[in-house]
Image (cartoon, rainbow, N blue to C red; front, side, top):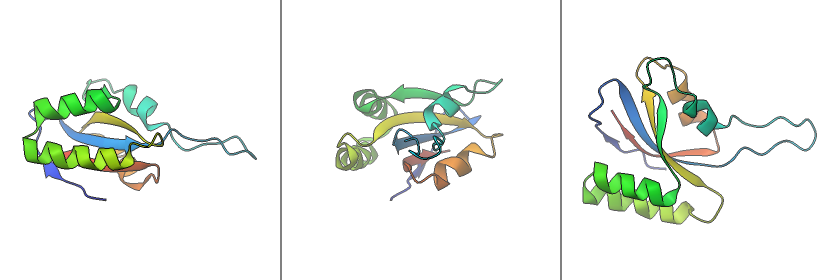
Length: 118
């Protein structure tokens, strides 16, 4: 997994391009991993934690508007490798004051960080 660093114009949050798997429920106990999209999608009181794009096509369009061509091409190539129906894609912004969510993104096995911008 590659984690690229860059910047985002919104200085109150970090940006992420992520590939994620929908959580599967355990057949025995019914529990599942965190649904990261619903967790981020709830946002916070300041509105600095949110999903800006979801789905392969929307994420690619967002990348083309947001980053230079070389970085965008590399991220799209990684997305193409993962685009077998197992992973879904999103661009997320996480508030700087949120200390837990970046750790969840880094440590959850069903999430791959394809890009991180500050």
